[in-house]
Each structure stands twice: as C-alpha cells, then as structure tokens.
Image 1 (tube, rainbow, N blue to C red):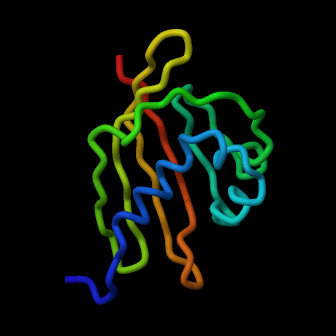
Image 2: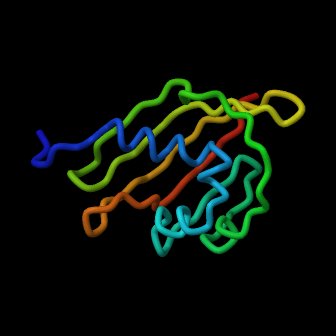
Image 3: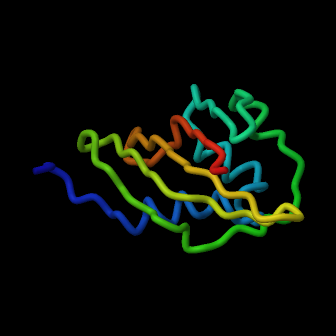
Length: 120
C-alpha cells in the first residue's frame, strides 16, 4: 500500500519519549523533534505553541508505558496519525485520549501536532 518501509517501532519510541522526563525536558532533543510550526491542543483545552512546549518546566512524569491502546494510522508515506490513551499520575490518575501527527521531513520524523482530550 505504501512505497516506503515505515519503522513503526521508531514512531512508538518517539511518541513514548514525550512521556519520559529525560527526553521530554531535554531542550536539544525536543528542539530537533518538534516541527517548526508545531502546536498542541492540551488536555486542559489550552493551545500551546512550539516555544511554550520547549520552555516547559522540568518535572517528574508518572505515565503508564507502553502507552495504552497505541495505534498508528498511515495517512501518506510521510504522514502518520498516532492515537492512544494517556494515563498519568498527578496526585490522582488522569486519563486522556491522545493524538499526534508525525511528518517525515528530510529523512527525520517531526512532531507536527498533538492533542489531548480528557476522559471523564
């Protein structure tokens, strides 16, 4: 169906790296990972810019890994939608439906967009 061989494990590793403090708060890593026009609709409903994401204060992340209900949905050879449920302990367990749009730019995967929607 698609012309290129896609490394699905790599896409999962990249997505899960956003839920590990050692990579999520590594400025060089995140600067390389985020597309120039990246933005996010947060679980709270707030919109975050690339700059706000890069300047986020480092804190422990207590997320369930591997990410529950993780699925990869090919859009084109170079664009993939990833969906999953996040489970993060912030005093109490918070769950959200998540989606990320990944795009291959110059042989490197970049996170273009992310959205979190709270699960009641």
